[in-house]
Every structure is written in structure tokens, then in C-alpha cells.
Figure (cartoon, rainbow, N blue to C red):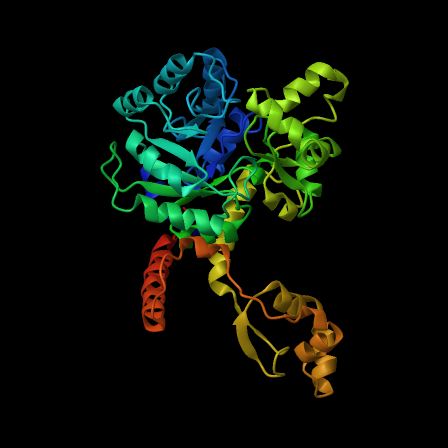
Length: 449
């Protein structure tokens, strides 16, 4: 199997640039250990980085979870991390923000340090200076979750060592900027900045649109050094999520993961239930009024109508849920990511559909469907002197682009000047060459012993 090496795999001594998202409930000790192992007890070099979601944990329970994780490790020295929610409270922050640690941040940090975590992750806020200093004194690197490029300078000023760019496709708390925009923007924002702990560059970890190796490969090409994976691991055998949560992810469609403010007062991507739909479609004024007062709509609803507790359950998931069709062991998920990245370099395939002659093209779902499922049709049409692609377009003209428009993508947010065509082309070629060299550097074919 191809082993992918990046600065993040080197920093934590892991073989896969895959980090388990620290999800409350789902990312407990068993799943975190499974991702850190991601292999048999003998082949301990095959591993990712498991992170425990510490939301709602008391210091005592967090210590219990960490020790249970360690018991599940093939090698007790394998790395693991802990994720806590530390939002800004008061001032100009959201009125629904509150101290998720219930005044126990200092004690929680003490547990994290004493249990020798390899990574601390701060979500939905910037870590306070006293926490950064204390963790750095213990030699623990800090990663800060961000949903917008404007948050990066604040995180860097606080002294974090890694940035996790949480794209809008992600489950749970998220922003609305797509991965293809947010991750390159964050990579640009950290250029020239060094980790206060290691003295090495501040690295970016991509999150929010990864369920297999194609997402991992895309993130690496965008400049990330690893990926933070949540939804795919909720649908894993070892996840602490209840079975209905796993089943809901497997059955979810492309429109089923939606964002809402009702559960936390912050944008949260969850499964689209009738309960969520009712709030989002019919009760926006009520949401606005309640959150303005610092009240969380779902909590208010449960106080009034406790009988809605089942219908009102929040099933957190990202938009990649539409592409997840089975519950798998964590090891299989991690290994498959590596294998598919390797396969990504073999995506140029030959087909007869465009010209009736072997033509090498990019392997799209359209080409794959013809090549995999419609070979007899290709043979029949070309035998009659007909081109399969042209026949297809005659039957389905709606596939053609109709109507002139002024096209622009969301990348327009990253285009800041009008340039001569020559400069644009030169810049593209220069950057493409650099990224291709980067991608080639990551893959090292090594035999397992």
C-alpha cells in the first residue's frame, strides 16, 4: 500500500494523514483508539490520529475516556488528541454562547497534560492565552478550528500550531464556505507563520468534505497537510453513535444535511427531519427572537413540549453522508483512503465513446458508466458506425448547456485583480508545477514487513 507522508504525519509519527474529528458522543475512546491503531496490533505503523470529543465531559470522565482509549491502543505510545469547545462568552459574541467546560477548563487541561495527549483541538472559538501557554509548556501542539479565512489571523495571534479549515459541507458546527475555497484561502493565510512550539510552519488540516481517498487527495492538492474526518467515522463499527444515527447517515440523500441555529444558536449541520424543517421553514422569526435573547430554540421547545424529545433529536452529519452507503470498521475506512489516493494517479482511462477509437480521457462518472456498464451498447453502436456519445446527446439534449450566462464560481471571492491573459496562464502553470511536485513527494511505495 502507498504510504502518504506529509509534515503532519511526521509531526505526530503517524502513517496516514487522517485525523478523527473530535465529535461528542461518536468519537469516544473505542473509535479514537481504532483510528490511532488503524491496523493490526502487529502492524502498528499503519495508523491515523484519533481525537476524543471532550464536549460535556467532566475532568473525571475525560480521564476515564483517555485511559479507556489507551487500553485499546496496540502500542501505548501511539498518539491521540482531545477536542474541547471554547467559544468566546460575552462582549460581541453570540448571546447563545456559554462556557461548555462549566468553569473546569483548567482542570480539563490538567488531565490532558497529565495523560500526555499528542494534540489539543480548540473548536468554535480561539483558545485563551493561558491555555496556549500551559499546553505549550507541556509540549502539546494546538490546532484551532476555523470556518472563515478571517479567523486565521486571530488564531495565529493566539499562538496555535495548526489550523483546521472546517468547510461548509461539514457536519456539526460549520460555516458556509466550500472546501475548495476555504482550504486554499487558509493555506495562503498561514504562509510565513511559524509554530511557536516547533518552529516549523503552521500547517493546515482540511475538514468538511472528506469521506474517501479522493477527498484526501483533493485536500493535499489544495495545500492541506492532513484531513479531519467526522461523518465517515460516525458510520463506523467502533463509533459511539447509536445505531439509528449510523443508519440515518447511510440512508441520507443529497438534500438531507441542512444547517440550523435551533440546537446551539450557531450554524449546525444535521439530518433534515420534519422537526428541523418546521423550524427552518416556518419559525425563522421565533429563532431570531429567541437567539437574540440568548435562548436556544430547541431547549425552549423541549421545556414546553418534552414529548417532542424523540422527534427533535439532532443527527449531526455532513453533506458527504449522501455518498456513504455502509457502516465499516475504522481500519477499513482509513486504509481505503490511502488506496484510493493511490488509484487517483491512474484516473486517465481509454474509451471508444467519443470518437469510436481508443481515446484517453479523465475518468468521470459519465465515462465510467459507459466503460463499466454499457460495453455491449458501445460495441453495438460502433459496429453500426455510430458514436456512442453523440447518440447519447441526441437522446438527452438537456445535458447540453443552454442559454448564455455570465459564469463565475465562488472562487471569484479569491480573485482580487484583472490580469493579462499571459500572466494568468504563467501563474497557473507555475502553481500547477509546484503542486504536482508536492503531490508526487507525498507518495512513497514501501513494503510492509
